[in-house]
Image (cartoon, rainbow, N blue to C red; front, side, top):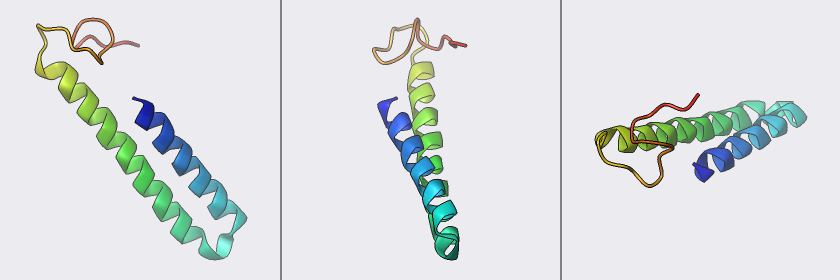
Length: 70
C-alpha cells in the first residue's frame, strides 16, 4: 500500500502544477488522472489478493484475509 501513498502524492503534485501553469493545465490534469488510475488499480489488486484466499491469512492484509478495516 506504500505505492498508493506515492501515487496520490504524484497526482497531487500534478494538480498543483496545473494550478501554477494554466496554459498547460490540461496536460498536468491528465497526468494526475493517470496517477489516480494507478491508485485505483493498486487498491483493487490488493483487495483481490486479500479476498482470493479468504480462509488463509495473507501476509499483506490487515487482520484475517478478507476482513474489512474501517
